[in-house]
Image 1 (cartoon, rainbow, N blue to C red):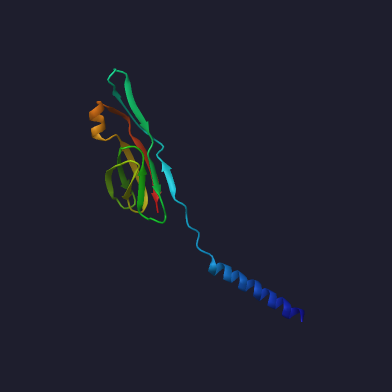
Image 2: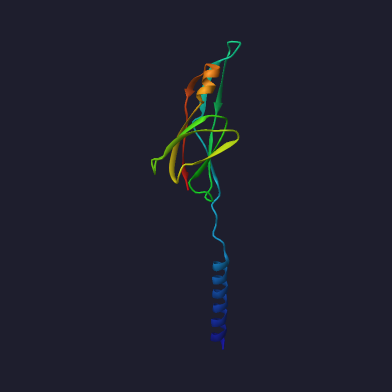
Length: 137
């Protein structure tokens, strides 16, 4: 009699475990934000001959729910990206507040510069080109 109860309990526990496994939804990975570790730094003369300029960080965001897509967030700078896994490359002007780009899945690297119109308007000079790398699902 005891053997029968043990077998019944074991089958109930196994059945409950199997039901939980089949009913459980797969875990979804969270979106990832990568702030470029090297900021864009540019400088230009102002009307009062004191220097002005900007130091700006750009963020690349990816979401596993949108494979192959990167969202760039920041002020209007030019992002020159290259997918090292596929060889695809392009330049995009980040518009406020962000822009989505189909970079493709894989390892992506990018440099960031002020757009030509900004440098021309302020007679600016780029001191440091921003840069970063991230993985796109």
